[in-house]
Length: 298
Image 1 (cartoon, rainbow, N blue to C red):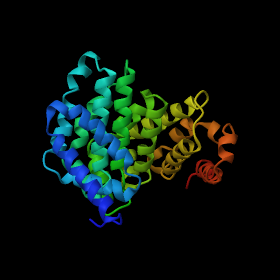
Image 2: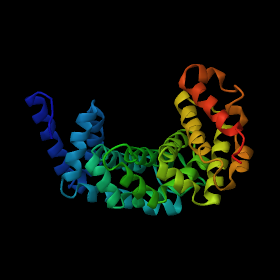
Image 3: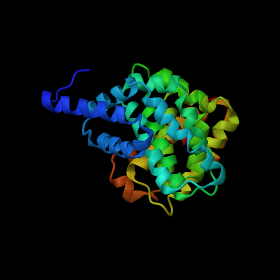
């Protein structure tokens, strides 16, 4: 891979990368190495640097296997709800390393073809009595999935179909419905990315029950904004979800369902202060209102 860093800096980074990869194989010091690796990932200040590190993590022997061992080792803690914060932190460090791999497009498609999301979904399926350590894990997993969900590139549509095959759609809805504010924010981002794709929108609308669940969950999400003021970006993501859904509002007789569950507070200026901070949101809301108030085709 090409790199514009000075030769000395580049060689130092490469040496440190190789040392961290080698040290991960030592189980006795693995927790400390994961901390160091996580800090090293944070130090990568440009996308090119993260891609370079992700490329070498992905192509190094046994690294992904070791990181998945960290994931699987925590499964018993899910059964009896005994996950401690230290264990959560260690697992999140391992997940961050996998997310770093996903910085590189070849690794993204490789991770999905290796069915890596299936190792992570047991954490997302827990929706009751979620303690703080598990919340951190769920948020880290969703950030990893969001990193995988890049659909506007050479492998984009294949990545979309692979993700949909893993049932990520229903799990995002579950996280929006039951998660805390940060979890809902990332899960909504993933949902928006899927709905903006033609194949993702068709997947949503393939089953009436699935479509209805989406608009119900989005309505409940907007209701939470009364007590948890969203950022302009989060509000924009929700509006974009509705814009995508409004494109098919007449298909399959679902118009009444869209109208019934549409949160009117989106278009009656309840979020005026937030909207004024982002000039794109009023334009999106105007288009959304047009889509939902036009007469059905005869």
